[in-house]
Length: 238
Image: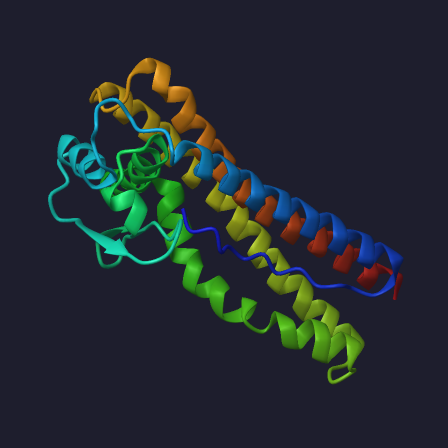
């Protein structure tokens, strides 16, 4: 549920480039504000069952037969994530100890990722394979966009072509991420109600928190796609 995704937006040449930057950036900021607003709201609503985020994640994983994943507490807000390589489910301090609807919802979402890992969910495996391949070239985007295109440190065509390749990789990565996150959310909601951790009338609060978080991934995909399309258009003018 970490909100820092590949939101790599750059002001590309021309009025169209500026428009794309503004649209992508505005969508990303709207998504960030939406999830933070929902999280703040439901962090103040305690679940009647009194189960903490830690306990919810543990119960869900135990039900799924997962005993080799360690639940750890990490600093920060909404820094929760599942690490499939080290088999650690990390919960931010509030979500670890709180019994709010937001806390148990986020914890259940991360437990959903642990279940995906256990059952070999195909899209998660694809995303995990892609991550290191995408991360390295994505780190070169600032140099390519600013150094290559604006400062002319690289030939124009070469800079555009490299940018297209990197944005194509990012767009595909974000596209694969969407079903992974949506599936984890669906699993979380089913498990929370199935285990009786939340009552049926508490489900909308959990759903609102997790649905809002989902928009950050949609925004990341849309931003990458817009930049990719514009670079292709720019290349076609040459």
